[in-house]
Amino acid sequence: MSNSRSYKAWSVPLIAGVLALGGIPALAGSAAAAPESVHSVKDDFNGDGYKDLAVGAPIATIGGKQGAGYVTVMYGGPHGLTKDHRTIISRSTSGIPGDPAAGENFGFQLSTGDLDGDGRTDLIIGQAEWNRDAVVVWGGQNGLSGGVSVPAATTQAGDFDGDGKQDLVLFRGGRAPGDDPLGTEATIWRGPISRTAKPTATQDFGSPKVEPYDVMYAAAGDVNGDGRDDLALTVYLGEGVVGSQLYLANASGGGFTYAASPEGSGQVAFGDVNGDGFDDVVRGVPNDSSVTVALGSASGLKPASTWKSYSQDTEGVPGGKEEDDRFGDAVSAGDVNGDGLADVAVGSPGEKLGDKQGAGMVNILFGGRDGLTGTGAQGFTQDTDGVPGAAESGDNFGGAVSLLDINDNGYADLAAAAPRENRPEGVSTGEGAVWSLRARPTGIVTDAAFTFGPRTVGAPTEKATFGGALS
Image: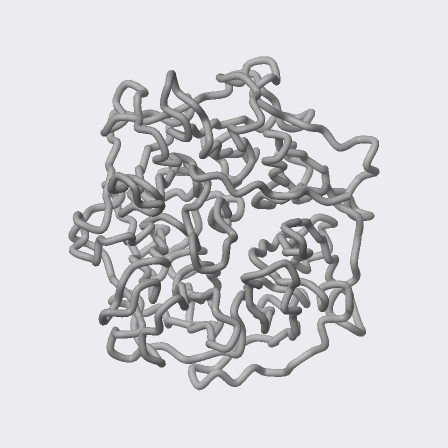
């Protein structure tokens, strides 16, 4: 079973008019871990002990090329994100290979991992165009700088062989502008990977099931506790249909083996929602305005009969289930309240607020010893007290979400994007903006809310779709 994605006007935050694949949100972040030592923090590009947030603006005009795209990196710190501590990266940035290209959508997809083993996280920036290369931008003491091309449109970092070093899966292919997928060539680069783009070794992907389709997004996590990261994909199947795939890492032979997993056309995230030591799979099913959670175990995902669905009709979850809400378009997992269990942020970019269609909403569902629960769930919109701004039709608040502990206090903070914020009348894309809301033991709070967009950071604004992707 797969899910056909409908592309309504409110759900075109990324590639409207380029790939006809609107409404596809960003790759959600992986589950946040407990505080780690300096120089070992995941998603820490400058090695200062604080997690950093990368924000894609894939439709922005760069060097006169519409849709060339860029990425803004907001560095974390003891007081969270600030407008003055950031890096802007495009094909025009010194040290970044290639030149801006119209419709490339640089920043469409983001992946993070310490590929060269220097203790600082590197950023891998993907794009939509099949014949362009992704770029690894290297972490360093002063932040991200310099880059090298890798032969892929989409990537995912993770320790897929369990040796303690970060590997990189490369998906060479694009995103079809029409009914038929372009197809994908998948390869594994074993880490560490040198700054001249030389892997320690290469390995076959191990399964041909991905080859006929276009890989749009990926996420990594260890569902069976064997020390090797597994891989979840969102893929374009053709004829307007988007589906999901899960691959378990092999101990030997080919890199991955295909496994059954929840179907859905939305984002996917890994996180241990019940605290049993196994990552669980959280799959968005926006066509049904729901998410499905499949619990991990020593033998892989538990049987389908145990998978549970959650929606805004689940007891305790704010809002009400409606098809056009597209609850589950974006998902991210992290420990919001510091109880050692992964919680889940769910974006509903189509949420209607009063007469404002597609204004958008984000829900937080908390982990529990019996799994994810609606008890105590939270809901946020631009009309929530303490959230800057005001809800407007078509903003698509919740079009991308990320849970990262940006101030290193042990609680995963929420980043939520409205990729079509500040959209001119009659135009399908907007400047975009991102909201950063802090986390405390009670959950997400609004008393230190910070919102930022391309104007805040001094980046290109026109049709930028700022927040179209979040790391």
